[in-house]
View (cartoon, protein in one colour):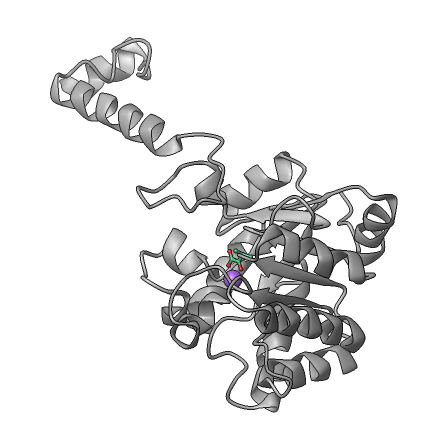
Length: 284
Ligand code: KIV
Ligand code: NA
């Protein structure tokens, strides 16, 4: 299937059709997302926690991330593919950041845009970087609100823009700046739904929300949260649509028990035959 393009995403947005996005971390999760017909796949740096066992996205290197982007991109399908720019891959200098974005895209031609987390100050470095990517024709999804790569400067994983009106104004202002720079979409993470609705209404590009309520132009969730793959705390904004971990562990323990009990494999059902003559020759 042909991949959706920015034009297709914008067409959905202008029709008022909600845009679906889900994360994927490897070939399996990407296939599932493609088969589910998600409009967009995000190769999120949440792969750090959801697939690699790290505590934070700040531990993920670009090389590790590349390996996962490659696996996701080997799953074909119509989804528009966005890859995160991981922590440390663009902050050192603009030329380094540009090189790294090119590298991601050179190695993974299915990647159609990169996502960059952005702070709220008017002179935030991410704004400069995003501007330089866009000037070079690289499509960018902005990401504001709870930006996990900046967990330390935000003082933890928490709702953004709910304490003082100036914080909400700053979120609004940076959303307008990102649009003016040329981002075709913005992820809003952990923002009170009334604030994200206003931000969305004032933009003419789609917002993709996570923990941002129903008023955004689209939704994104982490696949391992949707599927209940890990024994982690479920944030309030997550809806788990399955409990794969329970089904997986139960299936695996059944297998382990059957191996111990010698009830798997079953002769006949799970075995190959050998021609009698070959066998007789073999044992003699
Ligand atoms: O890495 C990720 O999964 C994300 C989404 C939560 C937006 O950035
Ligand atoms: Na991310």
